[in-house]
Length: 198
Image (cartoon, rainbow, N blue to C red; front, side, top):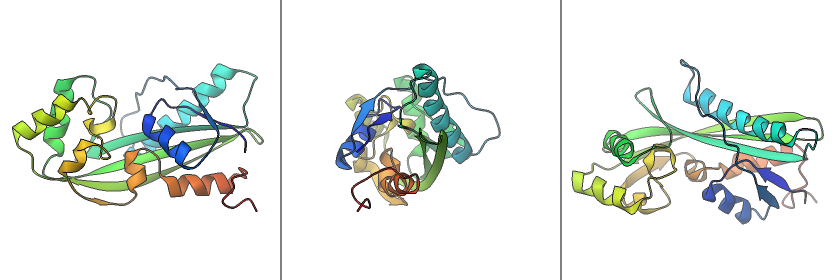
């Protein structure tokens, strides 16, 4: 199979690539994750995912690889967009807002096809429900350090699972990569993947 450049330093996405047995190299796209006002969570996530792919294309200049994958996860509640908290206090504010209610999680995936120089981008919206949390529960979670480097300040596949009362949609998308949709993207774009390449 042809190698894919994963434009992400996310350990969760790397784990999914290994699960899918895809050959890949890691090249995090360090972009300024600002976005225009008025965009929907889906539009923001898709814009950031595409920008990550384009950043790698620019960095490689004329050495265009056959495949690049970029992804971005956005959490939204009441019109607020939650990215990755920069500090503990910001993570505390996020968790305090998310607890006791449901919120939306959108993950967008952009796939660059070097054969025809095209970018296919798709997004998946899911919903996560948090149980009501006490202040000591929030502080305990913050002390684990899991909040660092993840959208919304929590890892559903980690200790935050203790606080998740339900989900609707794609679990893998909430973690960071919608496996089904990504599989369909690979197939639709002619990637020679073993599951359908017979």
